[in-house]
Image (cartoon, rainbow, N blue to C red; front, side, top):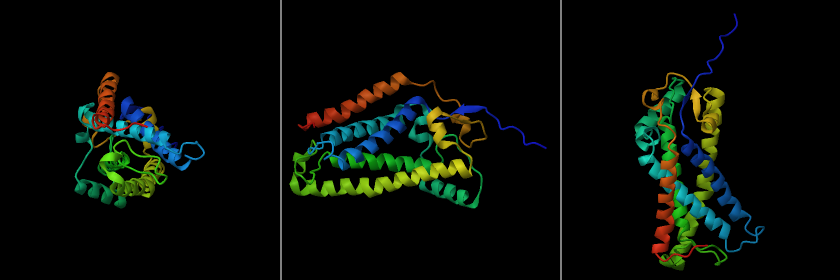
Length: 241
């Protein structure tokens, strides 16, 4: 007998602002790498493009932190951040083949999201005090660090980006691809369309019907995030690129 047709019914998982954040983060991280690695080709010895890119990244991360507290209920940290023990239990169940499905982030994925946000925030903050090798490019708050500490911050700024962040991103991408192939969970398409196939999700009861896409709230929080980042630097007498 032929196999029954798969259901095409979908349910909303990710709102538009969260999806825009995700793909903008991808673009800006790629831009941070490219504007540093190809600064000579860009005729940019002072790393102006790289520094503006870094400020944009910081603003985006601050926005996501605000969104994690003031965004729709299904996008708040409280809806997907679990304890480390919950992440370990999920990893164990995954390794033993125990089926567990989540509409939002699973406990392990939620932990990875928090680590990524914290890591990018740390890299961006260190960049505010950095001094690059050509001594022409300095972060806007370099004067508060001084040359000796600036070199320490710069070293950590580079190390946490490459290899740490790039390795974590590679693992994240690989895991998402494997989920699609092995578990048939379209995580990457869902971050494009915002929808997942209807199923019995553990967290479906409170996430299956998210609020209407709150574009105005997202834009307001973006303005707040930009004010916090650029306003703090300006208030401290920092120099912009």
